[in-house]
Length: 261
Ligand SMILES: [Zn+2]
Image (cartoon, rainbow, N blue to C red):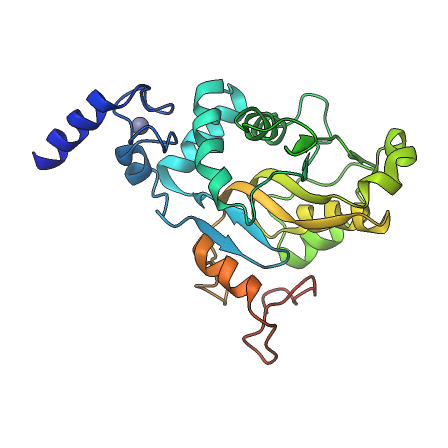
């Protein structure tokens, strides 16, 4: 009851409805999914982040109703919903996306997954700053060979499957000296083992470019032997700012962890 009243008054003061369900929205300064969408999609209020196998920032676990939403968006993308998700994701990016290059991870097939590119568009579209301060989207990567479907592969097989699958788009070689000065965020819809992201990052790093990490809509929940490694955005930023520790609890960086036993 109280919740319904609160939501109703939020609707009154809010100029725009929730971009995901079309219903009640959060206060106007936060124009992502509404409270009840965040609840039903199990999006943690502090975001989701981690550093294996590369630093990543996401919105929530790829599970339940949120998984269903993303699967339906893959087939039929809805601009408003993606705009709402991008608005929710952008505040998680350490130091903001301003001045960075956003690179969506390309699909092998021409009719492949449209979501990474659309999320990049929405992240760019909501910035208030244009170039040279704002982020820009560049299609720096192309697939150099097809990969097997990964659905049934374990982590180590996925790493092997992805190795060398991306290369720098030849059209960007001339601009490399300029691009080397700008940090890059990779963008994908779902992070599972990170094998794809790692292969994409390797192709850019081989060309001397700086990859900060990966932005994603969802993270496949851990079912392996190392549960609970995900953190909130704030915790991940604090950890990135503090000096590197050593020992078993230290961040893994780009080191490849062995697959599950
Ligand atoms: Zn909603």
